[in-house]
Each structure stands twice: as structure tokens, then as C-alpha cells.
Image (tube, rainbow, N blue to C red; front, side):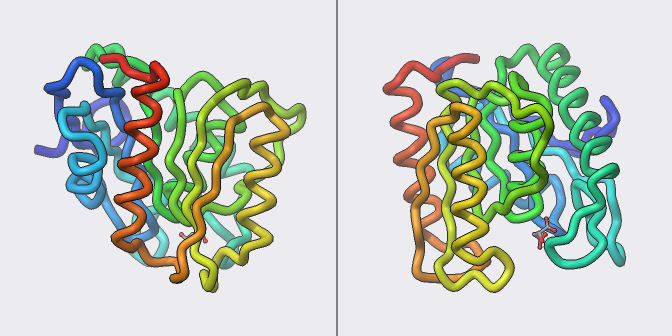
Length: 213
Ligand code: MLT
């Protein structure tokens, strides 16, 4: 069932495995709160899943923030919407009794996850970013010491060229995050390897002590 409480239409699936960190699932443009639930379940069976729907509509397609053109973002809107999303995560943590989540974001969802890291550090305990780009460069930069980030990028992605991926990794590393990039041969769309890389990364996080409720 979709819950419209807490400011965001969302789905919440309670966790069944106490060691699994909760996952914040952030869909791409034109997606909704249901899209990434199967991936979340497969990434870490038993994890609590929190999956909001982006509140901006672009020609009827939900997004997490407004853009002026492909890859050109409305930065005031991005800042405001990122704050609202961070507030939602905090309210959802209280309501559902979960710890700080790992974000799993695809495309526009990956970009708002990166914005959460940069603008509201502490909201996320880590992030799996699928086809992200630099959402914005905040002043001052936040401290993200040791926050684990796995980027999965497509070498032939027409929306995010490799230099854009590298720029985001560099930005997050400058803030202190522990960033890895996995390069796939494909483009912007999700591939089977995204899941496999994500599963391995999730396992490594838990082995490294990122568990929780
Ligand atoms: C964005 O607008 O966030 C990026 O261009 C990715 C997309 O949604 O196509």
C-alpha cells in the first residue's frame, strides 16, 4: 500500500533481518515509489525499504527536483527539495523505528541521493549511486568522513559522460567519502551487473559494520 503521510507519497516495507541496514530507494525520472522495491529486496533480502515518490512532475513524470534542461538543474529547487527529502527521511525513521538508511538511487534518484550527501550529511549512512552526475557543488563542502559510496556508471552513457562520473567521485572524495566506481560497458539504463555489484557492495558494508535496524 502507498502511504501519503510524512509529506511524501511512499512505500515502506518493514525489515525482517536485524543486521540489514534500511534502504532508501530513489527512482529515476518517470518512475514511482514501486519501481525499485524488487531491486531493494534483491540487493539485501530482509532490509527495511523506504521508497518515496519524487514530488516534481515533468510532463507528468515524477522527479525529485526540477531541471531546466537535460543535466541542467534548477539549483534553488534542488536545494529546497533535498531539504524536504531529508526531513521526510528523519520523520520516517521516527515513525518506522529504523536507523539511518543507505540510499539506492537511479539516475534522477541517484542525483538527489548525491545532493543529500552534499547538503544534509548525516541523513545517509552510505549510497549506491546508479548513473549519477554532480548535482551541485555546495559551499562550504560537507564532512563525509568515511561515508561509503559505490557509483555504477556506463561507459557509453549519453546522459552522464565518464568525466561527469569522475567529477562526482572526486567531489565526494574531497569531502572525505570512500568512493568506488564500477564501470559497465553499457549506457544509462540499468543492467544485471548493477544488481550484482550492488549486492557485493552491500555485503562488504555489513562485513565492515554498517548493519543496523
Ligand atoms: C536528472 O535530471 O536528474 C538527470 O538528467 C537524470 C535523468 O533524470 O535523466
